[in-house]
Length: 239
Ligand code: BTN
Image 1 (tube, rainbow, N blue to C red):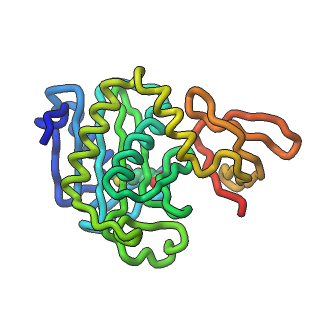
Image 2: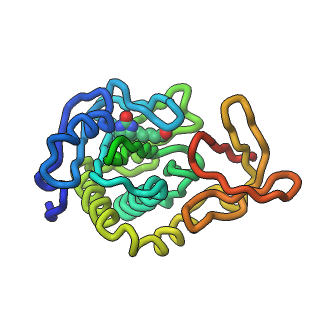
């Protein structure tokens, strides 16, 4: 494996509650400033907005990368760009990014990213569906690389992801303009009618742009513009 910050700081587990949680627990042990935790399964994988993240044994990549430094909230979108590039290059499948940080194929979720910050650490948690064949009641909203016709090599993808994430974190400031362009080109919500969902509220809007800080610019029915950060909002396309 190409030498990265993770070469001596990669923890591989069979099972853990959540790789994000494990990365925070191990934060105090790290010799260097970065650490990665990967597990074959998670008993309490978590997603945004307090949701569960389905983490079936050996069916996906469950990876968390810890950076011993607080980065701005753009880190989530930047990580989405990084992961999307790796998955596209490896699989040849055309992927989209659903703001703020889901990677989707034909509207179905392939990968979710959850960034969390505690004390002076940021953890980027990445869950990718590799080998799932049946999502049960989630069939209409979730997919896997296998269902898209690509048989992934888990270890190879993991290596590519760690190299790409390490490079992205190393060149965090410099690579921002390119990432913004890539994000816009790959967005599946820009110029689309959407619903903004926050708790019990569901408001129609149109996604009209992306700010320099990867925030979504939306216009409401009265053409009032508003900038929203990922925070507590989720988004659904109006079809
Ligand atoms: C989302 O879809 O809302 C984000 C899902 C993030 C899931 C990954 S899997 C690895 C890491 N550990 C967790 O508990 N969550 C993230």
